[in-house]
Length: 260
Image (cartoon, rainbow, N blue to C red; front, side, top):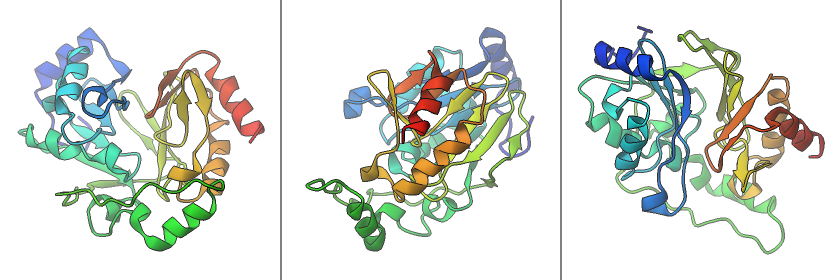
C-alpha cells in the first residue's frame, strides 16, 4: 500500500487488478450536463487512483463507468486533482460520503488554498477576469462568474511538484503545466506512454486543440507549458474535455505546439 489514503478492501482491489489493471478513461456527465467529462482511474495492485471527479450529481455515472473495470467509488484510495475548476473537483464530496475510509487528495501547492476553500476560485477574482477578458477576441466575453453553491472546500493531504514521480505500481510523472490555472497539472504514465492533460489540451471531434483564452488565467503561459509535454514519449493523450487521441498522438501534439 502506498502512503496516504487507508487501504480499501484489499481482496476487492486484487480482484479488480486480476480483471484489468492500468489507466482507464471514464465518461461522466452526459445525463446531467449534456456533455461528457473524462476522469481517469488507475488500477494498481494495492491502490485505486481517481484523477479528477466531475460535478456534483454525477456519482451514478462514475459508479457505472467504474464497474466496467471491476471497481467502485468505495474502493478509491487516492484522488489527484489536476486543478481547482469546479467541473474537476465538484464531485469529490459525493464520492467521500460513500466511503468508509479516508482517501488521500493530492494537488499542486498553488491550487491547494482554492481547493480547500481558503480563497475564492481564482477565476472569480475581478483582476484576473480583467486580464482574461483582455486576451479574448473582439466581441467575445467571459462566462458569468458564478460561485458554486454549498462548496466548503476539500482538504488537500499532499501537494505535488513538477518532476515528481509517484511510486505506485504504475508510476506517475507529475508535470506542472500552468496557464489554465497557476497550479495546473498534467500526468504522464511512462510505462503506458499515456498523457493526461487535464485542461491543458482539449479534444474536439477527434482533433487535438490547444488551450482556450476564455478558460485560461494566462493564455500565453498555457501555450508555453505545452512545450514541456513534447519532450515525452506519448502513445495516447486523454483530455478531460473531449476524450482520447490514440492515433499519432505524439505527432499531433508536436505539430500543434510548432504551429502555435
